[in-house]
Length: 275
Image 1 (cartoon, rainbow, N blue to C red):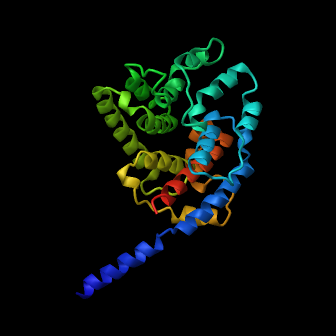
Image 2: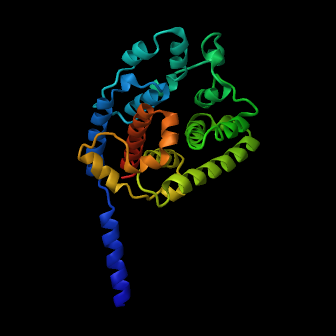
Image 3: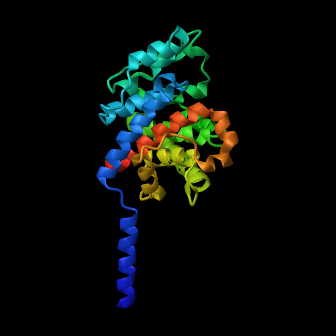
């Protein structure tokens, strides 16, 4: 009986130690949003990172996240080449946005994009862009493009595919997609999350794993992260990033910080909405 009592006390202490309240998360989300503004999203070279931030602002009604789509468009989509790509992300700005298939093949602009860079847009527009018969095979190819970014981007696309366009996949495609998702989820979890200190790649992996509801990260402890950003920590590199300096260098130092901010915001918001 005594042993059972001790185990129960230990359990409750452990649970309390790692508990994160809604108020903690609310404060961390607010202060993290301020730090994201310090990074200046209008300068993001990676258009997808900015658009994802706009998506979060809209989806979660983050009025204090001060970003303006027209200002970013005017700064970053200043000619047809970039403007045509900007239009492809319209779903991030409005769920009712419609983009047609010809927008993926505009001569001199989107027509020059590598086929693998178009995979996200097939996921976003179920009514107007037809998914290719070899779409899952193309996702498999994307997942092998680089050690980290390939699996990461593929899992991110899979999230949007399941959200917007899953119903248009064939049964065979759905089966292959499940196998691919499980493989990539286990790969990122074991390599960058399980028993690993916090790093940029840990945070980015955790984001896409949580997006896709990977069971191994369901109850992962984020109390240290929440406390850091409650204390108004600037978005910066982690000590453990030195282990992944080549991967981070390939992504781009400025790009990785923008992605970190987005990933942290995703993680905090998903946790907040569980409460």
